[in-house]
Length: 162
Image (cartoon, rainbow, N blue to C red; front, side, top):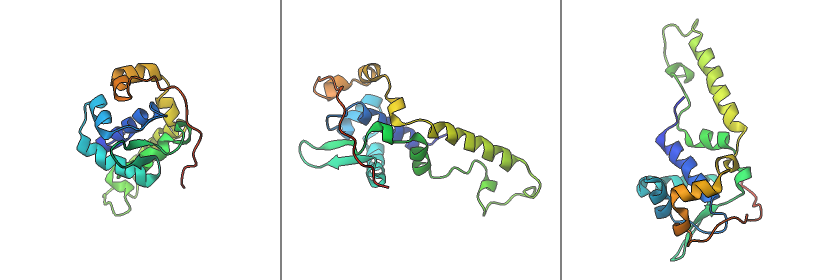
């Protein structure tokens, strides 16, 4: 199983936001922290907003933040929403064609592997990915991006839209 760069950057963006629960984060800070393109992140942040994972605040002092607690963001749900296609082989798609499809066991075996992969992700939340906040903020250079403040307090839980 291989995730797209889009999903990878999505998960990284969520981790960054989980590490800054009290402040607003700019896309430029996330891009700098990971050494990735701001243009890619703008598309990702838009989709995260549409999905209800992040809130954006416009204006001079604007930015983005999580729309709910990290414990409420399931990794399996994020991957399913952001991956454009979890068809590991063409025969996963009903329109796919294969000469041996009627007797082939490959689709079944790969289907089980995909289910197992997603089952592991379903057991974890964003909070698991942000479990070492001191190390992560140091490696991402977040102290400077967040004004040098140590971000340890948590926001009150917000309701995540369905």
